[in-house]
Image (cartoon, rainbow, N blue to C red; front, side):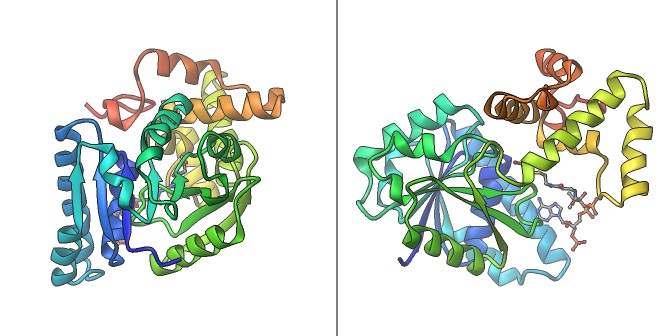
Length: 283
Ligand code: CAA
């Protein structure tokens, strides 16, 4: 199936990154969020991030202008009905995602492919609440989207081969690499990454190391680009906790028990970079 017009639901750090890479790859993008303020902030972030790529010679100035011209925004979710592909990148709460798909359904073309950028929620369950589970997939981008090479493609139990092939081709056109994952809690990347981050929080909680020594150990001792606590702040501690809860509940194994210190930080509203405070203080 030919994809031309892409609808992105959510203009946060994942949504604006997704809009960015699709527009640069030549797709028309319609991005929606619940406030004018988040949409204008997202457009400013996209412009700044494409400018970084221009400054480093990775994008031509004319391509920047063309890409920005391809991104339109709307406050009306239902305006996305005529898109060929919808990518839901709203907050990591199942009820929010379900409500978005429910509102969209009556306005969609029969051929529209629905996807969610969820980092852990069951694709099969999200798909089962729509009228097209065979055209529903997990489409999981990594943060920062313009930089990270991988996109996880998650097949729900009912996803058909044509939908998978179409998204696989889209990933190729974005210049990224697809990894195919089956629909089990947190798929591949977060099944492995989040327990490591959670273990880093336990290491801090039990006083084995300080924030600095834990992060330096993994950066200098295991060649990670960011330490696990710095990465947790970057991803958002609420997202990390939500993913650990999905693993804990979905796999019913105590090895996925979220560290109480992670829970406490989230309860305090210390969510990492986005709130200026997490394991590090960004104020
Ligand atoms: N848009 C465009 N370009 C960007 C960018 C953005 N948002 N952020 C960084 N860049 C570019 C920079 O311009 C720079 O480009 P060059 O290589 O051409 O110079 C390059 O990326 C590196 O950036 P910086 O020099 O500013 O900083 P850095 O070298 O410290 O790298 C980083 C920053 C790429 C974020 C690196 O620290 C890194 O790879 N961190 C780990 C990120 C990671 O693990 N992400 C996955 C998280 S898990 C996830 O996303 C799944 C989930 O569901 C939670």
